[in-house]
Every structure is written in C-alpha cells, then in structure tokens.
Image (cartoon, rainbow, N blue to C red; front, side):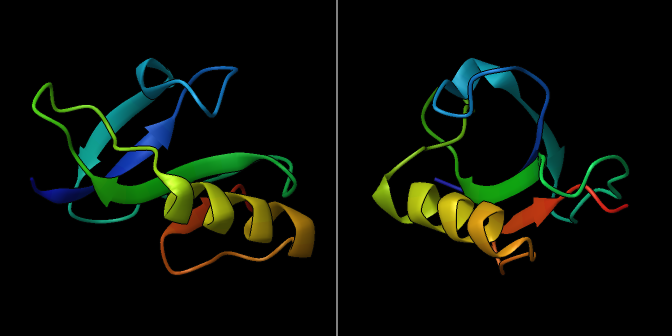
Length: 77
C-alpha cells in the first residue's frame, strides 16, 4: 500500500468515496479554516484512502485545534 494525499471532496469524512487522490504533495487549500481539506494516508487495493483510527484521530485533533496536522490539512482562510 502506498501513502498519498487525498483531497476531501464530499460531505462524509468517514466515507473513502468522498476523497480524490492528489499524489505525493499536499494540495493548496482555501476556504473556511474549520473545514477539512486533505489527508495523507495509505491506499487500499482499490486506491481509496484507508480511514483507520489513526487518521480519524488526526482529523479530530486538527478540527478541534484549528491547526494543520502532519497528515491532515484544513482549508486556509
């Protein structure tokens, strides 16, 4: 499994189908800071993001603290 960045493009952060692969570099993000922009995680056999406990915790920390995490980017204001 490869690690890559995925843009959040849907409405359900727990659904792998709501992400679009963007490759090895984090995308630039604009919009409301409290919104999820992108995550970096492993891919499954279908090239979808693996949404395990670790990435879920990182997403929660980023949103609670309103700061990017090493594997989670929020939209910048």
